Image 1 (tube, one colour):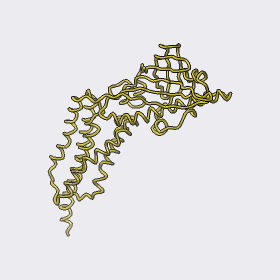
Image 2 (cartoon, helix red, strand yellow; image 1 turned 180 degrees about the vertical axis):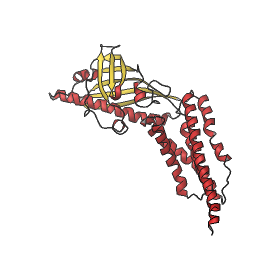
Image 3 (cartoon, rainbow, N blue to C red; image 1 turned 90 degrees about the horizontal axis):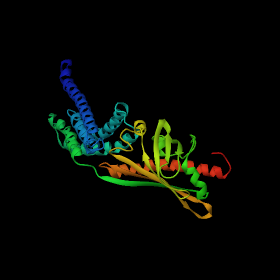
Image 4 (spheres, rainbow, N blue to C red; image 1 turned 45 degrees about the vertical axis):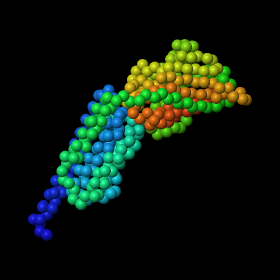
Amino acid sequence: MTTNDMPNETAPRRRDSWKFVAAIIVALAAALAVFILAEAGSGGAIGYALMVVLPAALTAFIAWTGSMGRNWQRSTFLLVPIWLALAATVIGAVFLREGIVCLVMALPFWIAFGYLGLWPVYLYRRDQRQVDPATFRAHALLLLPFLALLIDQQVPPPRETRTVVREIVVDAPATAVWPRLLAIPAIAEDEGRWNVSQDLLRLPRPVAAHLTGEGPGAVRDAYWQDDIRFQEIITDWRPGEALQWRFAFPDPSIHERTDRHIEPHGRHLWIDSGGYRLIPLSNGRTKIRLWTHYRLNTPFNAYAGWWGERILGDIQDNVLAVVARRIENEAGGTTP
């Protein structure tokens, strides 16, 4: 082989490489356009277009164009959904400023439906001795998320109501427990319970709760880390038995500092009400039941509800641990 023959062999490979780079740029541009349109539309970003069709179409597109002129092994095909999901996570966190909760919730969708989009491309490439160099079929894949956006805008997602309940038993009568539920001043950093949501996902923890007034209409002002504030408007006041409230969010501090897609009074999620119930037990003990009632409005309510059970449950467990520890310290004669 002469040196004059070398450019003839490397030139097609370079052209294929540049085609692949161009394909990646086109795919990123299409994904960004779908995201912007989904955010601006009435259906919101949590829909089939962004969560299902986009990862499937992008994976199929990248696998198709990337394997042109190359003899990709099966392991190379199988890595495409993983790398694409990780790249989407990094881009979402760094450039789109997405919160950790949304990114963690979206990651399994992108991996699972990425493999769904990859499978027919892999089967076609495996059965073809000569790869079709045409790219128009691959580019047509990028139209699918835009078509799915039309469906998201026209078909309203199902609505569902859910309640998250957690309980703890304390060695104190209900009369001693009741005052500790009304206000929770100055929660120290070492108080509470370790949990996935607030220790691994780094969601804020409560720092205090102050009560203004008594009876129905009284207001509990809740303060969390990162300057998060919200209110609990008392709707049921039964000393020693039950305390109930409806949630009010006078400012956007929660979704601005946690996740902008998890707006507590938004189109996908509506945190409605909550409360305590005191259940007397034998030997002077009391079971404290904390519950939160909320509504979901997404195409994936079962999946979102699973996360709601985990996240809200972790928050409730942490609050109950703080209350229980203070009641026990008070009973033992120590300062909380």
